[in-house]
Image 1 (cartoon, rainbow, N blue to C red):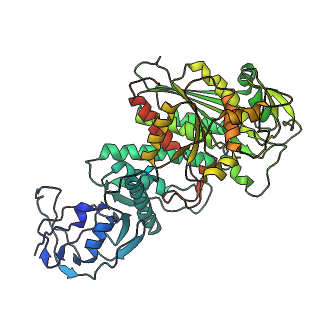
Image 2: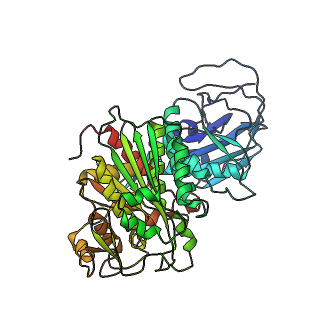
Image 3: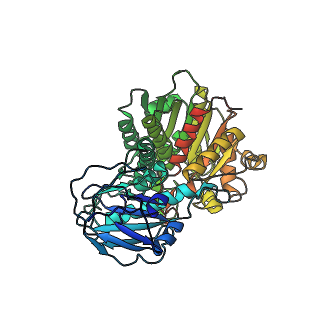
Length: 542
C-alpha cells in the first residue's frame, strides 16, 4: 500500500534533510499533494519550523512509517520528487509549539534516520527589523540551523543536509559558524559534522555563505590561538599560506629593517619591549579588471599579545589579550574571503604586528616618539599602544591613492562599556562610507553603530605639554573610545576613512547564539559584505 500526502509544513517551513510524514489528517481533511523528497542514507534529518507552521503541526495527527524503500521510477509533480512508502503506523502528536531556537529530538522514526531534530524558526516572513538594525529573518535562520547542527554533533552523526530555508546563504553561515570550535590543542575533540546543501537549486548562494562563514572562522581561529602559537611572524605566515593559491594576490612580509627605513617610530616604540620581532604584513588583492583602479585599503591592529607594557594590565583576564590582534585578523580574513569570492575590486591590507610587553627596552609613561608623518606623540599610557601602531600604518596607507581607508582595532575598553557586544563602533569622516558599512551590517547581522568624531575630542588629545599629541585624552577615561578615534584622525588626510573599534565584539559568551563561547571573529562578514557592495558601486565616493 503506497500513500502520498501533502504536509503543509514542508512548503511553508524551512527544513534540513527533510522530516518526512507518510500520512497526515488536517482537521479531518486529507492532504492530497504528495510529499516530495528522497533523502540519502546515514544523514540526520533536521526540521526548522516557523511558529505558524508549528501551530499547524500541533493540530496534526501524524502518521509515519518504518519505511522500506522500493524501486520505483521518479514521478514528477509541480514541485520536487516523490518516493515510495510502505507499512504505515500511527505516531503520537508532536507536542506544543517550539520557541525560536529551541529543539526537540525524535528517535526511532526510520532505520536510516534514527533521529530527527526539530528547531523553532520564529516568525514567518520576518524581514528587516528597523529597531534592531538587522534582517531578523536571516538571523533566525542562522540561529536555527546552528542550534540544529550542534544537536547533530552531540549525537555524533557525521553529516547533515541543510535545506536552503528560503535563504541558502544565511543557512550555510549558520551551519558553518555554529559548528566551529577551536580545539587544535586538545586530545579529545568533538565529532566533525559536515553540513551540505539539500538539493542544488541554491547551490551558488549556499557556497557564498560557506565562504563568508569560513572567513569569519579564520579570524576566530587566529584570535583564539594562544599567543605563543600566533606570534607576529606566524600570523603573517598563516595568512600567506591561505592566499598562496590565488594568482592575483601578493603578500609582503616586511621585517623590522623595512619598518625602520619607513620611519615608523610609533610602531617600533611598542615593538621594542618584546623579544618577538615586529612584522608589517602587506597584502595586495587585484580583483578589478583594471589593476590601476584605486583600491579599498584595510588596516588592522595586530598586537598578538598585549600585557599593557609598563602600564601593566591586571592579571585577571589578561589571557584574552591574545586576541588583541583582532583588527588584523578580521581585515586579513576579509581579504582571504574576497579573493575566494573573486570580488571585482582591488584591496590592500596592512597589518602592523608585534607584542606589547614590559622590559628594560619598553616604552615608559611620558616618553615621546615620532610617527611616520613627523608628528610627535607623548606616550602617557603604554597600554594605549594600538593607536601607535595604527598611526604609522594609516600614514603608510595614504601611499596608495585609496578609494577608502577602513581600519579595525580592538582599541578601547571604553567601546565595550559604550556598546557592549551589540555592535562595533564606527567613527568616520564620510557619510558615504558609513552608509555602505551600515547597509552591509544589516544583511550580515553583525551590526555597526556610528559614533561621534567631534573636534571636542580632538582638543583633548592635542592639548599636550610635551608633544604634538598625547596617546590618551587629558580627561583620562571620559569618552575614551572617542578620544582614541580623534587621535587616529590626526594621522588621516583621506576624505573617506572609517575607524571600527571592535573591542566590544571581540569575544562571545552567549550573545550571538550561532557562535560558540570564545573569540568571535567579528565583524569579518560585515567587512566582506561592505567590500562586495563597494565593488558593485559604479560611482566613486561622493
